[in-house]
Each structure stands twice: as structure tokens, then as C-alpha cells.
Length: 331
Image (cartoon, rainbow, N blue to C red; front, side):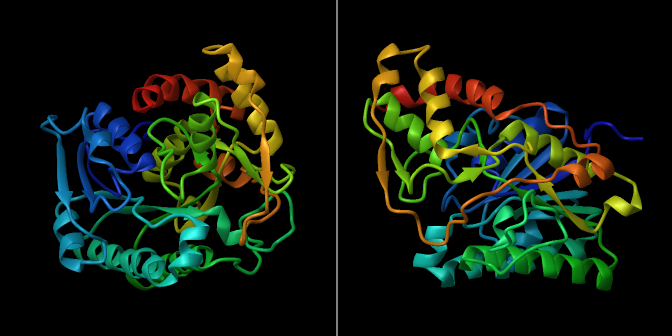
């Protein structure tokens, strides 16, 4: 029974992105041959700096919307980790066409390329946004609601295509519904920056972070190393029951935005005590946001052996150490 993914040829799409680059790094450290496909629309070349000189790493600058790029990237590959996507609910509301082209057409291109080249396992990033307006807490994989954004629709369509391709073409495909992932290399800049790095950068600058709504909205914030664990487990699991399905990837604990900011101020105060005194600003709730999100991780625990190592607070301590070193340099 495999306990570790090593000595394989793997492809990480979106490998210059936040999660993708961490995945590339982990897989390289485990002696895999890693191919990264990225068009740098949201990924950063700097995320690959420590890998680019490794002779087991290959960068293909290409776009998943181009089937030829996809076919070139999967050549000889045993496992695909499909992380490439245009994230962000607000971005999809502002530009649904591009979100659909990347997240749906690009996803299908990757499935077709993987099918045609005989890829053994296809693991893809799904999303907790698929739960839509479902009020059930915790979220369990087989109960979803209506999507609340174009982004959520694209990620649900991915799951539908994955299911059909698995059955029609005898492929092994596993989807991982990520819940609010955070950690090292997550970009704090730009209109669609995730909340944690954005808040951290703001607090380091002694500016007031703006919470959308009254701060009682809650999320199942998930440290990136938990996500890396889930990806590896999905790549190596051999139990037939565990394949061709989707899993929640989270910690399984709810944190309000108010609590989140308190944690951030507490941990950042270890580096600069005055950050504890920064005041919080409240703005209007964001269109398309769900009020509460909490995952059941029972299915992943049972079928994949998933056991997240980092709680929200443990993950924040790790992430803030990285951010303090890296974000202050940009000030």
C-alpha cells in the first residue's frame, strides 16, 4: 500500500499559483518529476524561483484554453493535479465569460488531454462554492444547493464532467472541494485577493482592515499543508470506493471574520505590539457570499485517510511567520 507519492512523473496545472506552487515543491521534495503548466495570468514566476533550476522540474508556459498546450503538458505523465482556474466569486460576477472559458472549457481540455495520453489518475481542485444556497451545516458532499455565482456554476460543471468522463472513458478522477485555503505564497494584492493575506498586509501597514458585513459570517479556513496532504492521498489511494467521487478538504471548524481578525492581531503582535491596537472597519456584505461555511471531513477521513495536521490557529501561526518575512519587504 502506497503511503507517499514518489518517483512519478506528474503534472501540476496552475503550478505557479498559490496552491499549485506549494504542491510542486512538495512533489519535487519527494523525488517526483514535476511538470508545471501555467500562463501566469494569476500565478507568479517568483513562486517557482526555488524550483526552476531543479533538473526534475519543467515549466511549460501555456494556457489550458489551448488543447495543444494541454496535450504537450500531459505527455508521459502518470498523475495530473489540476489546480489551474480563475478563482474568486467577485471576479466571476464581473467577467463570467472568461471564468467560464478557463474553468469549464479549460477543464474539459485537460480531461481530454489526460484521457488521450492514458493518464492514470486525475485529481482536480473543486470548490466549496458548489454548496451554493444550501443551509445545511456541516456541508456533506451529497447535499448541495443552487449556485450563487458564475464561479460556483463553473466548479459544479467540473464535477459533472468529471463524473461523465470517469464513466464513459474509464478514467480515475477525484475532486477536492477546497474550503477557504490560506498559507505561504498566497497573494495579498489585487482586487480579488483572499481575505487572510489581504488582512495581514493591511495590519502590517497599521491600516484598518475592512470586513464585509458585520463580521459574523463564518468560514472553515484551511491551511495549505492540509490541502497538500489531501492531494497526495487522492493521488495514491487504491480503494475503488474512494475513486471517481468528490471530497471536502477543510479542517472541520468554523471561524467568524471577527474571530479571524482577533487571531491575526494576536499573532502579528508577537512581531509588532502596536498591531493589536489597529481598529477594524465594517463595510457592506459582498454579493454572492454565503453567510456560513463548515465542512464535514468524515468522507475524506474514511476513504482517503485524511487527517488535517493544522487547525486554523496553528496554520495562522505558520502563515504569519512567512508573511512577516515576505510582506514587509514590499512595504
